[in-house]
Length: 359
Image 1 (cartoon, one colour):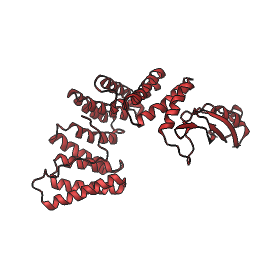
Image 2 (cartoon, helix red, strand yellow; image 1 turned 180 degrees about the vertical axis):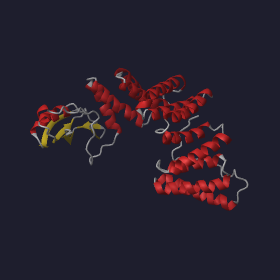
Image 3 (tube, one colour; image 1 turned 90 degrees about the vertical axis):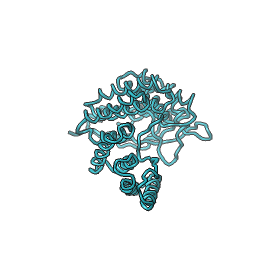
Image 4 (cartoon, one colour; image 1 turned 135 degrees about the horizontal axis):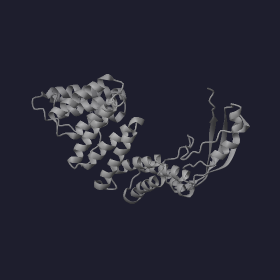
């Protein structure tokens, strides 16, 4: 069974479950919940919070404080609040207590409360926040609900990665998630592919670039062979591969992924192209000795393979920055422009800024 984290999602509620409710109250709730659904679709944050609150308050009266429908409505309301709102933490703690007392079998609901609460509490109590998520993951693993266990372990890893004090914990959790995925989840599982992105990032950070490349190429292969849709994970894998191949001086292999990205991302003439790989220029020594800051504006052509060529200087604050700017720009890689399904050359511009510290 595929389980996902609730994030402003429209819950499936049983409108007939509260036998003691009046027809007027039931009708009022249906209207408020319909307004909430409309707010979800519109993306209006204020309307979302207002309608989520109203649906929760009327739903609590209709279903009762301890009913699972009320808990889900409370999760929606809490999710609609900003993290700076103190009422969010109070509500999450209240419904977590109710859920643990009355719905011990609803592990996914407990998780959907625990995760945002852990994020709120992480700075003040890292260990407790991570332990609460790990506990849920271990329970799911014991029940052999491996996809849910993978979700919970990975969310704990993401949280742990936010602090240098728990980065080693994050690495262990990512590896544990990966082990579960490889043993129990199909290669085409979105959850497994999500973890693969994190494993590749971990390998890259530990200078295991070949392992990272192998993992990312596997993600691309899975999409090419088994999945007939584009997904952010596939785009991320292509982008990371461009960087890794350029870092390891394998520009010819990076080209394939530049082209793949260009096919996936619609071309927009109204915005400057963003480089997939950027080599930072070396600060010229003579400019550094003079404590000079400055900038260089350049025009260039992105080739059909995503390489930079025909670089021209538009303007510069100091001539001493020009050579370093050109040498750096020559190494950049882009996704080429596509027209009628074929790559074509395109002209772009960039400004490189040089700022030297004075203190």
